[in-house]
Image 1: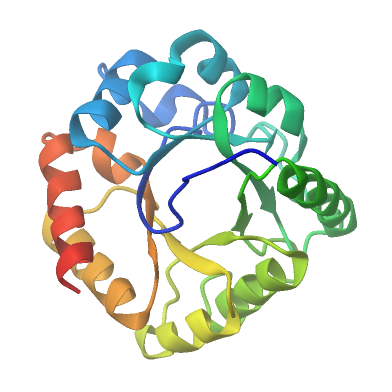
Image 2: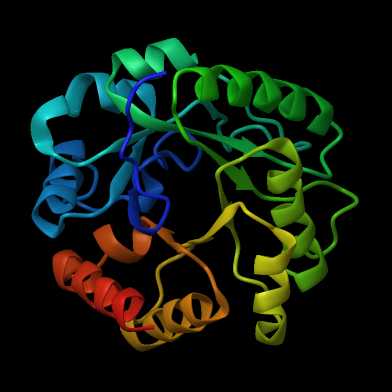
Length: 245
């Protein structure tokens, strides 16, 4: 087991969108990995999330920002039951400089059994190497009618705990009064908010303040930073909210 000082609280800058979303989420600046990695460095985020291709070709191990390598992915070109298969091994992630690994589980999909099995193997191997494991826990499928209901988000949190995740990344529930219940459902697993689609500064900062006060450990944010006109300023404000809550 190797020494790892990876933080399971704070702010992670996510840039794993290019595979699933295609280039539609990017503007003239953010389409460049170098631009987003530079934001991470200048803003001193606690970690950044990349897929293996961008990690291999653009991330430098000496930049001082811990790397989370996402191990599974899918495209949005297939319009069927959600399924994201493993595309990178734990060993490959380590070779790329990863301090932690992540994996999406779509509980509720008819393919959930495959994703749960893959996650179980990743969790076991990663922990042998001393790497924290992050679950993107996003219930999805024909039987999931509202993936942001507090019951479904809390269930997503519990799935992460039961599967041995160190950190779980969750969507914002549509009933704010249940935020603490979501955190309690995750037990010892640290809860991070998924940043989601870009919104205005006031709305976004209000959401961050509410989840941190409810016990969330941090936020994993992408579009709400690198689509912003002032990405470094937005990260600074998020840090201030986390520090003061």
